[in-house]
Amino acid sequence: MSHTPHELAEEFPDKVELIAQLRESNAHFAKLCAEYHEVNRAVHRAEARIEPVSDEAEEEMRRQRMRLKDEIYGMLTAAA
Image (cartoon, rainbow, N blue to C red; front, side):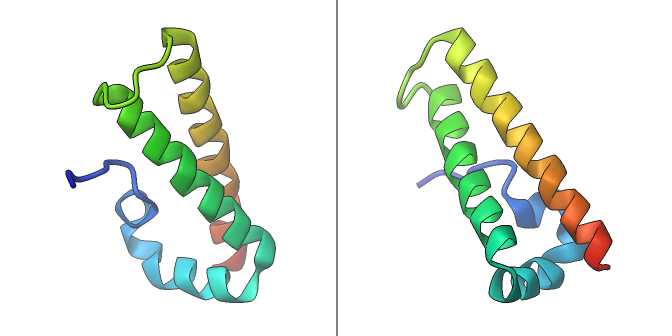
């Protein structure tokens, strides 16, 4: 399988350990990470034309990924 860009470890390389800790200790954070992972993979499949979707649907998935990333970042900075 090809590399999927925008994985959380790639987006926040200095916070990999904190991400792992919060996934274990915070159910809401773990749920956000799982949702981010799912949406990110869907965006990648759409961009790679593995599972083509409409331009509007692809843009909405990107916005959803950005909202999730922002919320995850907020929780990471609050926990640091």
